[in-house]
Length: 132
Image 1 (tube, helix red, strand yellow):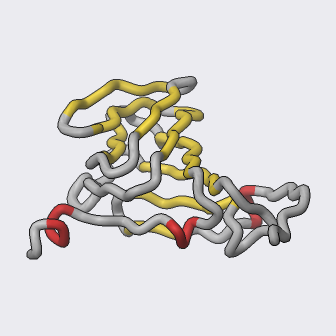
Image 2 (cartoon, rainbow, N blue to C red):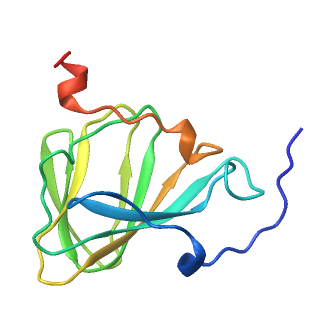
């Protein structure tokens, strides 16, 4: 039985999490933190000049990015695609991907997963996938 109820969250009230030097994010909708289900959503920021080392990843859940501001490239399954404010990106589940900032300003985006909770998203990185 779902305990989901209408919910309004505020970005500035969500804790900041990070892959240090790569990306920071705030999870805004997630069943482990909010009275919601079915979808997980948050905002992420990638600073100009941020490292790409360790950014490549995949997970079983499909993901959507919506770019709010800045300029970058999303790397999906070996192909780079330019993105700017207003770009929407669909990433199928199980596909290697990452976002890079190619501009001089902060790259800000929204992310969405069709899972109840951010804790349902299991991240896999190439060195782990290769057994290293």
